[in-house]
Image (cartoon, rainbow, N blue to C red; front, side, top):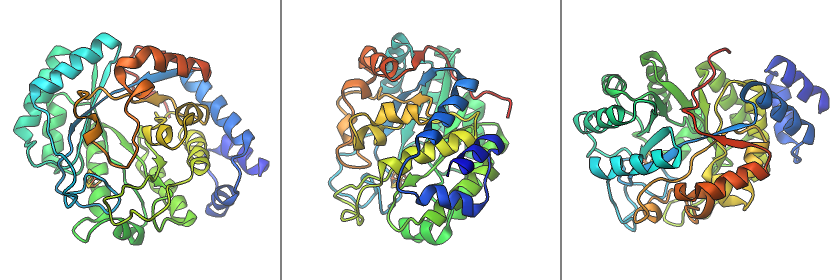
Length: 345
Ligand code: SF4
C-alpha cells in the first residue's frame, strides 16, 4: 500500500487497479493522510479559506432521488430570498471577514437571468474585492455567460457520479449525465472557476464508479472539488439506505489532494454532520476550505438536503470566532482573503 501512496504523491496518478486497491482497503492509511497534508502545506500553507454560504432558495424543479428538497417532497416549507435579503447577508458576512459569497439553491425557476443579473451586479458593485460563487444547478450556456458577465466568478456543480447507469439510479429519467457534464465544460469555457464533485457512499455506488469519478475529474480539471458522505433524508425514495462512510470520504479527500494539488477542497458540512470532528478531520485529510452558513437564521432549518444537517455553532458564520478556534486547534489558520485557486498546475 505504501508504494502506491508514494507513487500517487510523486506522479499524481495511478492506474485503475491501483486506485481500486487503495479504495477497497478498509483502513484510512496514515501515510496517505500525512502525504496529502504535506502537499497541501507546500501549495496552500496552513491557510483555510472561508466562504459565506447563502442558501437563496429551497425550491427546485428537479426530483433527484437522494435530495430532501426535491420537488415532490411536500413537507418542505419553501422560500426564496430576494435581493435585499441576499445583500443583507453579504454585508453581515463582509463584516465577519468573508471575501467569497456562495449563492446556493435548487433549480428555482423564480430566478430568471434578469433577476440573477440584478442580484449579482449589485453584489459586484458593493463588494469589489469579493468573489461571487454560484451553485444554482444546470442552466444554458447563454444563461451562464450572462451571469459571468454580470460579475460572478465561480460556479459549483457536482457531477455526482460519472457512471451513466449510476446517474440514472440517482436521478429521474429527464435528468442526463451528459447534460451535467456538458454544463460543467460550458462553465469552464466561459471562464468560471469551476467546482465539481460527488457524494461518497450514495445508493448503488461501487468502488469502480469512484475510479470513473476520478477519471472524469482528471478530464475536467476543476478548480474546486467538493465531496461529502451521502446522508439520507427521511422524505426521499432513498430513506432506507445507509449513510456514506466517513473514512472513505476522508481517504478520497487525500487522494484528490494528491491528484489535484492546486485544487480548493472544502471540508464539507456533511462531514461535520456525520461526525462531531468531521470538519477538522476533513482539513487534516487535505481540505483547505470551509463554508459556514450565512443564510438568514429563520431559513437555515428549511434548507435540508439531508436530515440532521448542522447549521449552528461553528457551522454558523456569526460564530466565526468559534470556527477559528476549531480550525486553529486542528493545525490550520483561517485567513481573510478571496482564496482563488493557485494558477500553476
Ligand atoms: S440535488 Fe439539487 S437539483 Fe436535485 S433536487 Fe436537490 S436541489 Fe434540486
